[in-house]
Picture 1 (cartoon, rainbow, N blue to C red):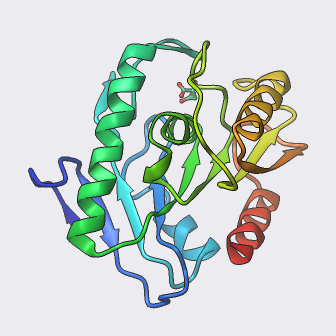
Picture 2: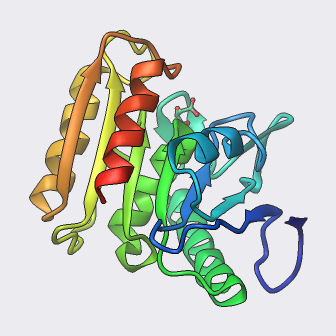
Length: 207
Ligand code: MLT
């Protein structure tokens, strides 16, 4: 079902899943994507999971995003912080509307960056997160209690947008706050590969 309403505040799709053991997935698209982008991926990596997929509210030209940036890889951190809280409030409202436990975020690129920000600013909003091609969201990151929060970080060694050192820094940051981080660097670029999908499927099935 696709809906916009004032209760949850975001254009989104909710697809109820048939498997009560599976945690719901919060699907967060990349720049220029929308609420439909990651639905097929979600169905394939976690069959039977409920899917909650909002559209980012910020427009860069015609491209939806989850927060403003000043340049590629340079974030408007005040906007990021405000948008992170807005997204966490959406998750809370959607959970009570659809009767869901805390979801696992599966974010790609811009969606992965706001998922990392959710972990740092509103960790209670998520049961864990798979961050696909993410970078550290804040220059001076806040502290957070991420004790045992499962995090999968998949980065590309040939990624022109996220240098390897940045994904290492993000993995170290989340681990230092207590998250159970699994970080894999793949021989790929910013786009996702079959290896990403099979690592993600395996990680989700072990949660
Ligand atoms: C971002 O702006 O979040 C990152 O640069 C990734 C992107 O969307 O290109």
